[in-house]
Image (cartoon, rainbow, N blue to C red; front, side, top):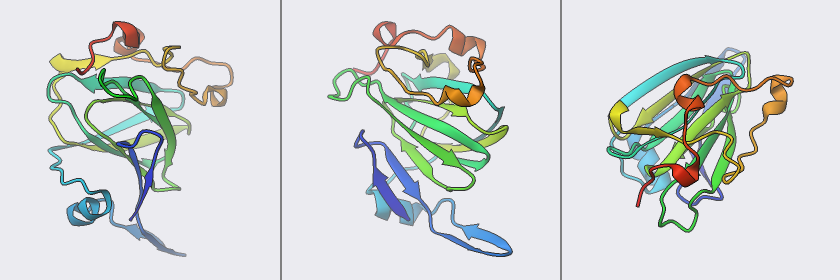
Length: 185
């Protein structure tokens, strides 16, 4: 497994070894020992999630104040633009973001640590998005930050939507601006 640093040092891009030939491919999507050796992180994942979304769906930017979740995310069908935003008030990178394309073709994974908001925009006709979390989902503690908050300035690749706005849930339509959001101290 290769590990790549991002502009936010805690957020990592992981590239598994893929063995392929004319019949298809094989890859180890997760191995606790190899993950720990490659990243220096000794984590326990407690929940696996799978979401399917149509082109133009934007989910996020989500995080949990209590039971903050670390997320190891990947795409097994289609492609997304995946984003992590540092929402730790005392961090020198507070409000900064990184984005990476995750797809079934590149097999990349993104490690989004606790203390970071997370979201993604579906670029393909449909995408199956899988992620492991280090804490259980706690809807009463979930918070959202607006995807288009100018103070963060995420450069979402919305040109693929042919002039349409991203499709948002009601919760994401009502998300707070970073300046007004409850964040980590």
